[in-house]
Image (cartoon, rainbow, N blue to C red):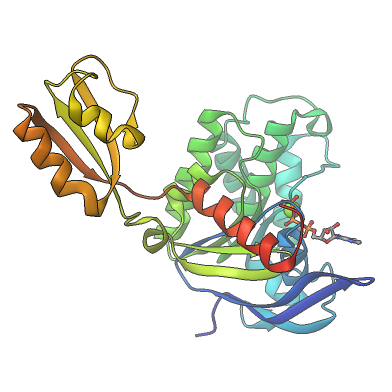
Length: 306
Ligand SMILES: Nc1ncnc2c1ncn2[C@@H]1O[C@H](COP(=O)(O)OP(=O)(O)OP(=O)(O)O)[C@@H](O)[C@H]1O
Ligand SMILES: [Mg+2]
């Protein structure tokens, strides 16, 4: 079976600028793939190419087995743009119109639209959808994207305007869709959200794919370990000796973050000084750290100012 979404050396130039440079990337069935990268990296451009809103300058790709731009495949794709805009007067009509465009008919369409609006907390939003707040527009855009029960969801910053309950609702919807075997490709700057739901991440910078892999593999093992020692004051010799590794410590408790190679000697010296070992925790990297490191690498490589 064809992969739900495949970029095949996709390139897009605007004048002399390459907004997307030879992107090759496959979204597999039943996965959530987070598409990360600094502002202007080319994420929205890649999404617009996949949906056929733009034509590639070179290369191409496939969406649900059809070439980018092939209209028939769109019926099983759900798309949320980065700035959804609505022309319908009510939320219900905005969602039903989206369903009709994808060949859904009443009464199923009406039922599904209502269920989604209620799930996204919009059933009581009686007012003109054109005057919705940004977060309400994003919720409504999400309902539109889901109404046709798509096999592939492409979402451009789906939670950027949402309040915390909205973020939670979308997270649950995306997880449920994935568990149902759907594929989800979404761009986001909300790294804590990405950490919670993605199976894999792709990192794009200056139009180039710089990293692609499982989220867990990127985050695991930072080479550092957190150590907490009880019963020693801040004036203890060990606190001075490993001063550079100490983090905020309450009274008579010492917190350290040390490279793994120092773990053993620090613990032994703490014991020798009469301290008690409370915990040793291998530290994970944060996606934020990785993001910053990768962008700096890209800037250094391309000679851009950091
Ligand atoms: N229609 C266009 N004409 C000219 N340049 C464009 C056009 N669309 C995008 N670009 C340029 O392409 C580059 C990539 O833009 P894109 O919107 O894809 O970035 P992005 O990764 O989605 O950024 P953000 O995180 O800010 O949403 C930018 O330099 C942008 O100015
Ligand atoms: Mg964008």
